[in-house]
Length: 317
View: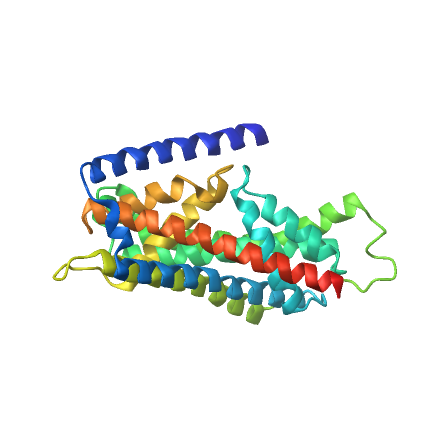
């Protein structure tokens, strides 16, 4: 079953990637790509890269809050470089290496297995619901023309309610499932002589972490808006930042849930292109998507570099 899902994810990524390549070829045929080297575009892309790079701070703050809520002594200064270093693992096939690396490294800090696993599960659930909420709210306010033809857009409010209810249900069930699995794996080691971890989250932690994950989408969406504005002609109309925040959130969630797609490669480009088509000229859409992929890849590389240096120094110290 796992192999079938992984194969399906890779197939979806290939199909979406082919779609984007065809779309880009048609849009950029006989067009000048030097627009990406324009000083205004370079400055805006640098801002987008900086915002994406800094967004890891919000994720690290949320991870620290989650572990503290489960009574685990984990310092933000130790978790931040771990997150920065392991994040680059999402480019490996399977899209799970970063999570495995995080759990392994945080375990070496003395964090118990159940909270380590559950903190990652909570993060994914809260990030997914934040992304779904932002995307759905954007659809309610200003749906893109490419999606207006789909009948599903008539049920935006019920879908938002279903996603929220599903996430809340998963948050309630996840601690029981993880505790059961950890007991099957090792019923004695983590309970003997070690204070029991608190596996459920208090409402304040859920609210704070939700806001932190949502802020990441806001930061990157705002960066996209800056790049779109730099690509537009002098009198060109550019949608509001809210539109780009929703566009990125929607492309992120679909790229994330595609099994086996490394870093959502192909899926996110295709979704973002479909979202922006009809709102921006096709050339600007392709250039914007390319700028986003450059910014996110460069940002992950920067975080990997400094995170590795900090972790090495912490071990040496």
